[in-house]
Amino acid sequence: MEETEPPFTSEIMDEVMPSRFRMPPVIQFSRSGDPSEHVESYRSWMQIQSATDAMMCRAFSITLSESARSWYRQLKPKSISSFSELSRMFLTQFISGKKSWKPTTHLFTLKQGNKEPLKDYIARFNEELLLVEDYNDKMTLSAMFSGLKEGKFTFSIGKNPPTTLAELISRAQKYTNAEEFSNSCRNIKAAKASSKEKRSRNKEPQSSNKKPDDRAPRNHGPSRRPEGKFRSYTSLNISTG
Image 1 (tube, helix red, strand yellow):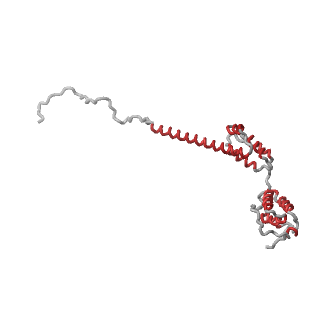
Image 2 (cartoon, one colour):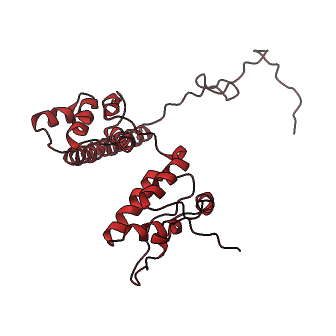
Image 3 (cartoon, helix red, strand yellow):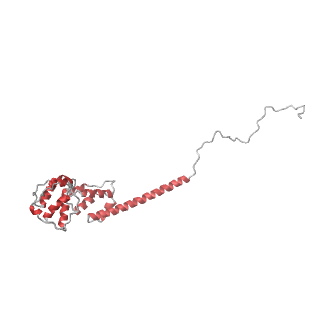
């Protein structure tokens, strides 16, 4: 395969890469990710290693794959003189994959449903929080608290308000665990009561609903000999013997 000429100026290419340089452990970028997150992750790792601007430019291509690497190979030779310029061109090319951030006020629109468990509300709130840019702990805490439905948990929070979002979530988790344990105990008691009632019904004597068999002989009192038709008889003159 023919090697393409690097897109960097001679000043960047002339800098020698240190022997102890390690590549950043970042996921390779294709086209489906967020380009701004990729650049920031890469920049942070390189700054930890005290990498120069030239080193950041030359190592950046290794973090690209598929269509992103194809884009890099098509850059004009000697057209880039700094990492800021390279990252700007990269973001412009793949801006369509950037997340659509929501304002902090979006968090105040999240409300716990009447039948929604506290655990589900906390999980849903945290998922939406990932879509909000530049939020602060105080405002996030206020938004989560305002979305809670009234009940025992909000009463507890009102008596002793948490000072951080982490504290609120921790207390919500403890309350959820206690609630689930209580429901489990009630279910066990209900199952035992149902089983006891069933055994009690099985011990009761069953009443017979069978009708007497019409074909069975009926007893109407002591039996009598059938009465004969004649009441007087003529004595025999001839001996039978």
